[in-house]
Length: 304
Image 1 (cartoon, rainbow, N blue to C red):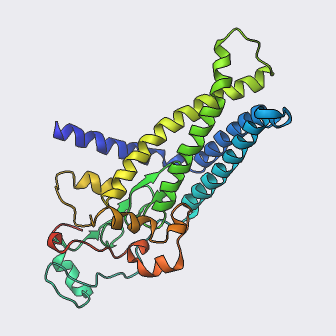
Image 2: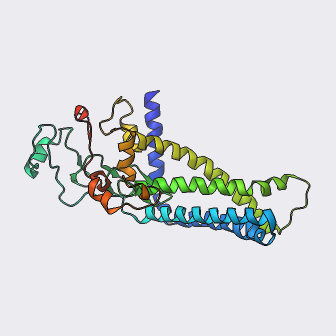
Image 3: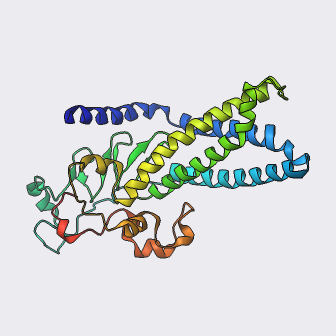
């Protein structure tokens, strides 16, 4: 049973690798869904409702304001993930401390070939370079990524140390936006199954129907991913690490939920819900740079 589960997980990653050829088509697909949704909500249904007056106009105004605010945050977070470098290993990077021996001097290049069998020193044979703690090689990008979580075909980029927060915000605002659209279009969707006359052309009705189905599907699927990643943040781990350490009862980087959260979102509350960091957080939290991570001293014997 254990072996079949491992094979299944590996096949998922191979499937993602096979999708590398889609490239920018995925970005166009995302923008296409946004366009259909915008047309259905703003142009077809709630935009005209502003001229109705009374409670209907007030409802339309509230829906449109919330819709546009969430849409701005969704697109800001999305393109931040797309265009932000996830984190690459600096040229000629060397591990400053040999934690296995307790040395405090930087390791020299002459030591690496002899110590490659040492589990404390990680080396990527594909990139022919040392791997910092929590770094993994992405077969899609063909490079090592700092604190790699996964390669996401929807953003045509790796999700790593430098853009993981942006990815989480993208999931968060996508769930809020699709849920809002689903609820706002639900009354219009229900009408399709009644005997009442439905105003509008076949094209506008089809757009409303399609937008409702798409947003309902995305809201349910994104909710699952969001819950999964919230649990990963709470444990200060990544998708890859969670798979690799599934038999490890304790995790050396689990510093408690508050500090784990700050390792991803920073300490400045003003920046928690926007895809950027304060300069102060970037200075005082080394983990946001993707190379140094605080850990529990009693668990330092674990692999990095």
